[in-house]
Amino acid sequence: MKVAIVMGSKSDYDVVKKAEAVLDSFEVPYVTRVISAHRTPGVAASFAQHAEEDGIDVIIAAAGKAAHLAGVLAGNTPLPVIGLPMKTSDLGGMDSLLSVVQMPKGVPVATVAIGGAENAAYLAVQILSVREKGLREAFKAHKRKMEEEILAIDKEISR
Image 1 (tube, rainbow, N blue to C red):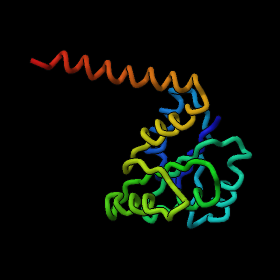
Image 2: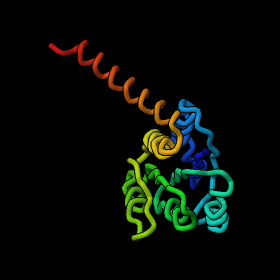
Image 3: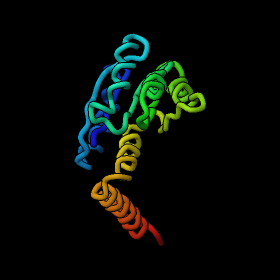
């Protein structure tokens, strides 16, 4: 069981680190790579084509602007791909979001919010938990903890 986090540019790493932290908290192994759909298209295709045999189960693809990385990876693998649109200086990330979410029929990419690295990792954990019962229990515990935190805040401020 392993997650691949692929980013289109090193500049995406400050956001990607948040996904790594979530995966670390669930003790999910991952590999992080910088692969560009536009500058290294052959590497992107090869990575996706060999991901399954390399032990990858889920791919998180972080990219900005045209953000074709998730689609290129999804087009070259049967594995689930989670698109992580990155915030951009041009359009605030709307360009990235629309590029990631508008996939052709038969090439699905699950998509999280602009800069939503944590949710990309949580979704990867949920996908992996379909087969990994221990991971499912850990995710349930995480959800209970979130609920307890909110209930404590509610109790503190409610009148």
